Image (cartoon, rainbow, N blue to C red; front, side):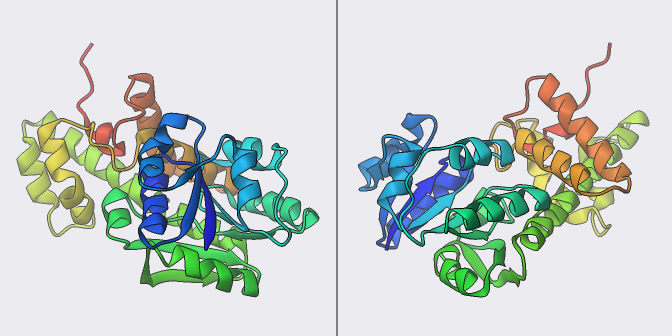
Length: 283
C-alpha cells in the first residue's frame, strides 16, 4: 500500500519504520525536516509539506504531539485529500477532540479512525504496543491492517467510537502517571529517615507499585533520565487532557501533574517522565 505518515517524533519514527520494513510505499513528513532523513535514506519519499504528503496517499497516519498539532496540521491545513481517504490518527487526544475530528472528516468525506498506542519505545520496537481503535466498523477493519503492524494482537481493542479509544489511552496513561508519582513519594518518604534508593525500591517489591519500581528502578538508581522512553512533556500533556475530560476531581492525577510541571520548569520536559523521582534541590 501507499501510506503517508505525518509526525516523526520518538514514537512516530518507529511506527513509520515498521511500515517501511513491511514493504509499503511510504511518504513521510515532519515539522522538523531533519527527522525524516533516516527514513528518506531507507527509501521513503520525503514530502515537502503536510499537504504534499496527504495528497500522495489514500491512507494517512498522523502521530502528532497532541490536539493542537492535529488542528494545525490537519484541520487547519489546505491539503487536497484523495477521494474516500482513510485517516488513522495515532496522536493522543481527548475524547472531545475525536468528536471534532470525526465531524470535520465526515464533512470532507474522509474516513476517520482513532488508534492511539499504549506503551513506550521498547514495546514499539518489538511491535508489541497496545492499540485501542475506534470508528465506523468498515473503517476500523481497514485501519486494523495498518495498526496491526505495531500492535500486540491480544492488546488490539476495538471500540464503537473514536472517543472510547481515546479514553482507553488516557486511562492507561493515568495509571502510568499515578504509579510513578507513588514511587516518587515512596522515595521521598524513605529519604526522610535515611532509607536509600535501593532500600525503598526493595520495599516496593511485591507491592502495587512494584511493577513501576521494577520498570524504572535502574533509571532512578543511575540518576540519568536522558534515555527518554516517554517524555515528561508528553505525559504532562496527557494528564491535562484527562483532567479536561472529567468533571469530578482526579486528585492523584493532579499530584502527578504537579510533579511533571515542576520537572518542566526545571528544564527536564524532554527527559523521561521518571525524572519526577529526581531528588528536589534543597534551598
